[in-house]
Amino acid sequence: MNFKLVTQCVDSDPNSNCPALKTLLVSSEDSDRSFSRFGIDECYIYNPTTNHYVKLPKPGIVNGVPRFIRGVNVAFDHAKFASYSVVCVRESAVSSGLMQIEIYSTTSREWRVSGDPFSAKVDFDYGVYWNGSIHWIQYMTGEVLYFNVDQERLGVVPMVNKPKPDGKWGRKLDYFGESCDHLHLIESYDSEIEFNVYEMKRDYSEWFVKYKVDLTIVADAFPEVTSKYAYIDRVGYLFSVFSLVRGVKEEDSFLVFLIASRVFRFNLERQTFEEIYEFATSVRCPLRFMGPCAFEYIESLAGV
Image (cartoon, rainbow, N blue to C red):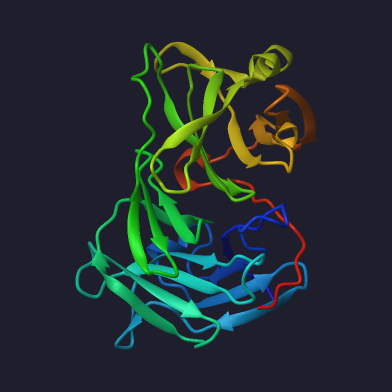
């Protein structure tokens, strides 16, 4: 079986609440396009370890008419529950400017509408499951919306509280994801080789600085991280964060990031690094606007 479009994450830590299942969406449209702007033909839950999958009823059907799907995500904590739910965000039948949530559960084996239509400007293509909720971010502004699956309610996460940049330019959100039951966000500037890793408190009261990262030693060893921005006649730093992995011990936590064709692992406590892979050619990563380029993975026997 061939799948054209794949979304959702799997995680590398068995204690993490990020599912070891994937949502796979199949569209008859050009595979280079985002599925969220068009209808989908088929929706599957897939376990890559067992190679088992189940086809779900097509979401987003209102009175026999398919609505545009904005995003589909799995809500599954395999450390706590044997079953999973799937959350679909689609265009509302009331107005194309409003969103509507549908939920699929393994008990009912069907989609049902949850809550009222709502407006939001976040990117529903990529959701992060943490703290019993699915989280979506707006990569341009850093705004975060979440949906608590058990309570079926929406909430807003406060934005990162940080001082205004002094002389910095090229702001970007490099990473938004979960590891070992911690939600992280990384914001950096093209003009800087140092940045902070933020973590969200479980009560959603604030983001706090968990790690301070300085990649100067990497830049010294690999000058290709620097790039000339001709349109502003400045030299900046060009890298993409693939993933942040929290270890059982703090000294085992690390970043995985890309510079040109090289992939590096950077220890967040020791501030040391090693090259772990090199692609044949440079990789262009659309991370800052479209979510991550890589997903963590563990083997799991979770049923579908």
